[in-house]
Length: 236
Image (tube, rainbow, N blue to C red):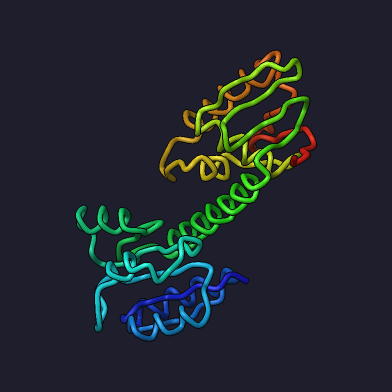
């Protein structure tokens, strides 16, 4: 069960968030002051933090830039401060998402899930990078160098976006990945159009991997669900 810390001094909003996330299976700990939050973070790290900006004993922006939270712990700002300046500053100094009050509970849940999903994919990519190379379908991929070596020994260069996309497939062979998962893996924004974004990236990757990109064998389309890498993967 993912553990979420909520730093929020408004009791009504804190109760709403607690009720909403608890119904979705998340464990939540609430804090009204920065000092309480900081003490608990030093004792135990959560899986995600929800942070208000205007607090009785400080500003949440300072917390985002303080270095108290490691990068492995995603943080989402939930605040009534909706100016473009606040949003830009918050995202630039470390927020993974920014939600303004009032908000729809369903949107909060969706954004929490998306941020946690991106964190999981990032860890998987990090683990894959530690292995550096993977063999699949006659190809050898080097995700650190962004290169492929084909069955005939030909070398193919990959863009960073193509490398991230391929890494997502290599970490989940023979498993259907939705467009949302692939968009997260390539660090796409949640509001990008899936068809024009992910489908185009998959098409470009197929051209480099497949003999006939119009009849793909390695990366197949699962209509209504997403895409699947049909090869086993051996990490080298």
